[in-house]
Length: 234
Ligand code: CA
Image (cartoon, rainbow, N blue to C red):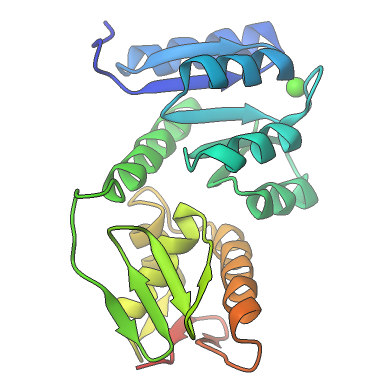
């Protein structure tokens, strides 16, 4: 039963049996599904019909997952959930750096996939302009504009992915406080998260690199080893 107003999920997967399983699980939870079985089709479908979320395989005939993320990120901040081979840590890091919001290992746990899709869509909705406007957050040299999703560091704009934006925003909302790994994962990625410290670490590394690109001499986020992070600007 698909509600015509339901969010649309583009599944990019070249293994037909796995693509069909993904489609069945996603469809059963009430979302609309679009399936692309190679990189060309994925880009064509995304361009023609758009999507509210993309479930993306990396190894594909034609343009691979890396190229697809890059092409999508050039025009859209749609959540991208990457599916990678188990143990391919370098792939996961590369995917997050390219702008994926989350990743899952194969073999995929379908209930977990559904929870992650729900969480990613919730995050995307929360940053829809007008959805909520807590106002500009000014923390020393860091100015965060939730409504327009912009961040200025010493007056220089930096471009963050939706996940990096939420991470920065959550830390900056609690200046000086130690924020634990689990707390940050749940606040930024969603309540189904808690153990994915690698996800947090890589996203934090990207966020810091972007902050440093505008203010190389400053350090806005301190690491408390084994515990979490602290936003140091008041
Ligand atoms: Ca594949």
